[in-house]
Image (spheres, rainbow over the protein chains, first blue to last red):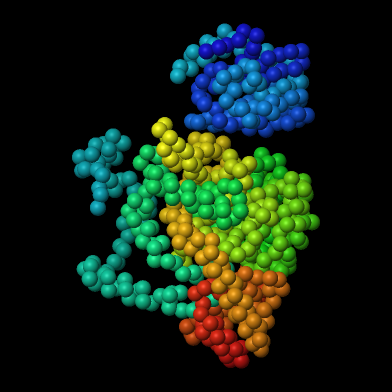
Length: 130
Length: 450
């Protein structure tokens, strides 16, 4: 299980990479492993739309479950990974790279302070068992 | 009778919950209602019971015994004997939901064939394994459109010439959705309005436009302009069909429909009060993940052999729970099988022939009825197997007189459309002989000056 140190993590298993005011969002290695083979991604937000922290912005279907993906920060969408719809399996193979979902310009960069760092998230995942 | 619990088990359960006797469990029910006297007659032997039930059955006046000109959504068609014969096979009639593909290949393949047949018949890319009936399938189209637009578009336009029962069911299904508005079918609307009259109602808030083809009054319209206007506004178009008519008509898929629904009863399912009937539901591949209910897919196993499985189940309620787009977890498996057998027996040519017979008999009847003094065919548009007749008297009165003469008359349109008092909807199928049509005309003429 991979927990990159430069990222922040939500309790609902999304990761956030912060570059200035822009946050890139995806789902964690732990989340993709729990879901198993992912077959479908549906991102409900488009560039220019505003959305708030905690709202559902995507759903991911695997061969055994469907999961909602929540926004860890509030802001305005500046990019959507359109390729993901055609290749949902990259969420399994490269959750922190090619499988980014959204880039969002944060209303309040302080939102990130509510998220866990890598060691805290790893501990959180261990505590949930399997 | 199967009684799962022994007396000692009951004792133990009562003791666990702290109740002395079974009767104590019912003490919240007022005493006088608790164990009412049922005044049932003495028990009967099997022979006596059979004779009594036969007497009841004989009191029915069924379409088997009477010429039937009643349609309005379900139709009296011939059902080849093979349909029932296959349905009665235990492998099909006792099959449970095929969650275990390794023991359910027969049922799954039958469903897959059904889906393929319905997709081909409607001109669509995909069909689900069915809904309860035409009304619930139409309502599911509304639910799907709502979710397709994630609740952001809140308007559904229903043509007034969609079957009134379908419209009522759409309203029932959607009344709990937040802020949704259903327009277009207000009762003061002209019942003879055309699909293109709905174009003015379509806007950027519209999720779905629903029309029927042929419509409830039997009429056939070109839906191209409506489809174009619907798509220009970014909305979806649902078309409710009579599947038999598609044996000869252009398919809704060719008009650009996004969803095709309909009552599958004409495809080998007997007329029965309350069903079971068959809800057809077909759509475009792009919308497949929003389709409610069950889907069967074809695949290969590890050794490359053909096989069938329930597919895309992550859409379904048993996995998606409260996030599912519909709470439907079942289908009309046996009725879908009946439709598959019926369509397979007839083939495209046979279905076309049935459709043509219905069409020609209805047009022959319409011509004859239009010539009777006091009656006029007022459909005002090309029609399939049903037409509207303005009558000289209330339809209920005419139907009563017809029944006395051994004829099941048409549908009283005044029940649903206040503007159509004294208007009867008359249906013909391949079952109506020319003699029956002559007899109907003779009796209609007699009734008019009684």
